[in-house]
Structures are given as structure tokens and as C-alpha cells.
Image (cartoon, rainbow, N blue to C red; front, side, top):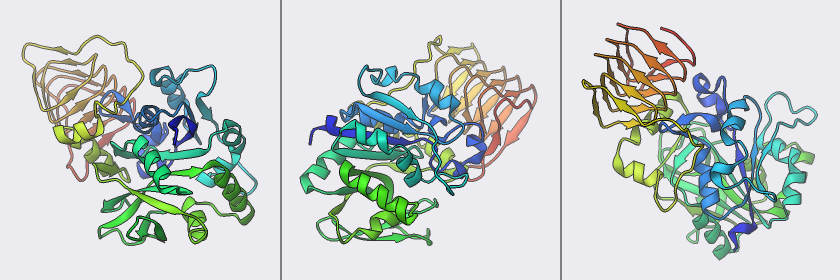
Length: 370
């Protein structure tokens, strides 16, 4: 299958409610990650690396920062006269309420899907951290001649709405989709990413609209006996963000070189908007260990097991450990932080101490002064 015959669709607001502390003022897709990146960079870059040249980003709310980050799509080579990157704003249908489901959002964008002229559509969310190679998914789908291919992983499922266990036969064909209510055991679960024939998708969307079906899971389950639905088994690193703790753990996992290599693979690079900052500066008494430091940082204290975004300033005699500090945050002198997540543009004044735990990190909101 030619990868340029695939339309990419990314849901930028899916599962915002799982980390309301961070998504109160932004979409899930624009949540900072790994210092220099946003969560949307992962699926968007993988689509581009797979040769997909037409990508639509479906938004619902709080998408100003997302639009600022994506711009024209130049950083992903998607600033094009034809095709390229498209932002698909919210569209509501009668009785849809305040929460727009994926099905409703897609139905509102059905003209964009139809006019793309592509034979297949690939969907992805932004709340999953992994090194999935979409080119492999597309190749698998072609090999199986599948109507739908769902990306699946084995392990402990995330506690998200419509979490789904995927049951397959020996050949990988999906025989049953089970809505999950028990998250205490390992299963083969849907990673909320799939590829589907465009004409079939259009038909299913009309069917879902007529029958008021609101989720892919329900829609696929209703047609499982009529279609060739296969599961692509992803066996690499994956972390689905379903809480502030999961976001913290996914971020801290990057301090492990093997995880970092799995997510930020040189053969499947992750692109992002350029920051155009000066290199990080280290004072004569700075002590930095096992941390990811972004450009524009100025460090005069101790930093250990941390992720620092662009422009973060750490004062003298301050000790920052096991923490995530977002863009342009200023930390004063003689400050002690442990297991803390600080959103961008915050200020921690001199002589303050904040301590959390890995399973309950302290969160400081955007622009907050302490």
C-alpha cells in the first residue's frame, strides 16, 4: 500500500479530562513533554515519517496554544500548497451536548475526509507515548487486506473511557471487542489507533449518525462479523496517559536511555517547532545529573533526575530532584523541590520547599507564584 494514499487524523483533545490540572488551559495535544516537545509531536511525526502528507487535526476546545505550536506545519514538512496540515475546528450536531465524541467530530469533518481522495484513513490520539512506526501498521494492513486494523498492546490497560479488550484468533483477526471495567489484570487492549478504508469509514459514519452511536468501539463491535478487522500487535514501549501520575511516570521514564531510544528513535525521528533559544548555561556551582535539559535554561544549583523545558532558570543553592519543570519557569535561590510538576511561566521564590511523591506529584499551575 502506498503510504501517500493514507489520510492522517489526530484527535487533539481526546482524554483531556484525565489530566485536568495540565489541560485546563490547553488541549492534550499541546501538553509539554520531554522538555522540547508537545504530545502531538509523537503521532504527527510518525505519520510524516510513514510518508503521510495530508493530516487533519481535530480540535474541540483550548486549542489556541496547539495552533501556535503547529503553525503552518513547516516543522513537519506539511506546509504545502496541496494537502499538508489542516486544523479541523469544533463542529457540533443537534443534541450532541458539550462533549463532542470522536464519531460526531469525524461526521462534522466528513467533507474533509471525502475530498482527500485517499483510500485509507489512519487515526491516532495524543495521550499515548510510544515509538509506534505507522509505516509498519500500514504495511500490516495491506498484507492482511483488512478493512480495519487496530493497534493493540499487551499489558495493564489505562483507566480511560471506553477502554477496550481486543480478542483475536491465531491469525490476528479480531473476533470480539470487550468494554473494560476491570483494570487490575493484563490484557490485549486497544491503543486507540487504527487504519480503515475511507469509503467504509464514510458508510459507518452515516450509520453511526443515524443510530446515534458515539464511539468507534461500539461501531466496530456492531460490524465485527461483517468486516475483516485485524489487530496489529505493538510490542515496544507504550505508556497511555490516564492520570497526572501516568504523565509524570511517562516523563520520568525518558531518563532511561533504552526508553528514550524507543520513543525518540533516530530512524523514526520526532519533529517539533524550533525554539530559537541560546544553549543552556551552567553556573560554576551547578551540579546536573541524569536530567534532560533544554535550550535556553540557566542553572546555578543542583538538578538531578529532572526534565527542564526551554528557558527554565534555577537559582543558587537550589536542589531540584525528580521533577518536571516547564517552559520559562523561574526558581529562586535556596529552593528545594522533589517530585514536583511545574507548569510554564511559574515562579518559585527564594527559600521555598515543595515535596511530593512519585505516585502523587505536587502540581503548580501555569503562571503561579509561590
